[in-house]
Length: 203
Image (cartoon, rainbow, N blue to C red; front, top):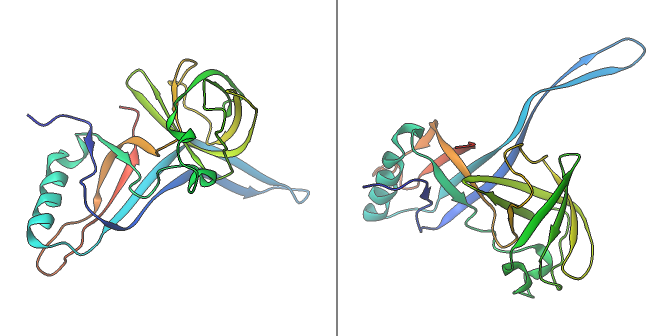
């Protein structure tokens, strides 16, 4: 029996990254003004390309892609190259203690408690959230606080299904996602690396 959500295969990637997509339209207006409308919620896209794979590894990745059933099965995508905030690359440890979300203001100002007192967050660091069976990913714009409390301003805004009480993780960038089948290049003798794209999904 295949269990979902599926994790990324344990292989090497030459390229892998999350990209935030915003759905905004702009139109020129009178008086040198511009009308800007966000017509859909922002969402994350994850694009990856493997290193050159031998036959057995290539077939393993192809089978993993097949197991997702064209996107019917979800994957829990964890960035294979991200493991800690920038300030902790050479000072590991504080990022491994999880925080607890106690309040959300304006959709993107997060009040977090129970973090390690030595945790340092910088713009660009990822913050992963888990609440019940839901996941979210956001990126630090600004962070303040001391002791075991932090106030984090992040983008994008948290989705409505992430609420106070959520677990905050600083040692990973991960999100529940669905495969974009139009993006897949499977392994073959003529193509020894695999590439694919995933799109953020609530469930």
